[in-house]
Image (tube, rainbow, N blue to C red):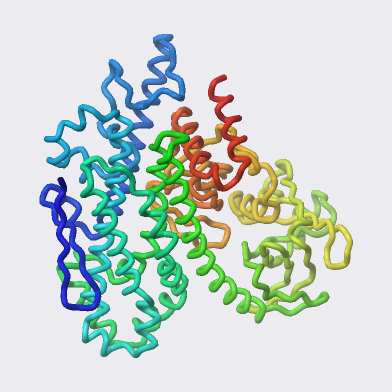
Length: 554
């Protein structure tokens, strides 16, 4: 039986420590370290697995052997040795395996359990151990930063509130959650389930994450301002970051812990869901837990977006003047998708005009989710709107190759502009990627290079993220390590338009941040898992899934 210990200090907040010598590998890690090691291990596991299956696929073709079906278990007993990390696919925690605990190795239970059940145990065990590591980081943040007397002196009440928000409530919530997870593990060395606990806590207690994450805009602004304007604050933070307990991690990495955890927790539940038997009680419980976590994550994202989008609209409206009938910009249902310069082509399309620089004039576009504004730039921060249209009435068309002068040129049609008539503009971008990004944003329902945006059934290319990426523009997609994406389009100059499988978010990112998944069987399995995770959210997913199954059997 695993033994646990609860050490409570005299402060109002309680500090829980997961004390088991046999599993000390993760208790030494702060959550920032644990998360990085976990995702790096996940990337390496997929990388080796992809190369292994791809090599086997080629060998089978060479030997004219029967190729294993996509339904075959990846860890089935075969003549060939499995890849080194195959015993724990995608859970990414080889530094603290459930099956390596002395209590498990000495019990003989590994001789009884099926490989699929062992994988499920590992997935549930990772969720518990990662929560323990997360709680450790939260506790350190509170004891080292929040309760530091010098830092309290450097901050007024308002600054402290914006900087730390309700972090104490988040800490108590994590402690309560971890206690229940530990109690479940104490019941039996083989974990019965954890998703029922996750469901209860997500539904009743995880609202504290929404409060914390929605404060993110104020938190970032306050932190930047304090660093710039308060030398006492800078000095205290610099000194605290040198504390050995921080292990060289910056203060900012502690501030973003709750947002990182709630999103990661959803992915850990998805990992469990892909390993429970289909149409079982465990699957039903995992789906319920995933739905509740999805609600929390969606509310967190929407809270952050709503605040930043409103501020952005206010800022844009101040820069505009209208040559046409004025259009109200600020709306709770509107947000900016893309903005920037393009060259508008004018005059007859003849070889003579193509040789003149007067062929193009610079215009500036503001594209919102429901509206396009076409502007002339008057100054560095002033724009005159000369045309507009509803986004749903936009169409784009790429020109055939017509020489260097027309490279990266596309046609934008406004089916009904501000004057209620159809007009066309011939626009030139600075590069192929910029042209495609504008075309994708202006007309999102157009077909992409590899697969229609309305269908996920085709075997389009996939990749996994091996370098995190922070979006620089509204049409870009921020990526975390180990994210899996469908590649919907790509450009010759190094940009990819992709769809992240776990939440169907789409956007552009540099191709250098990812590695393509080569094996079609793995791509198909990734799609199947995606459909399974989200099948309860949309009834049509079941139909899509059946179609995918029929394709697999053909």
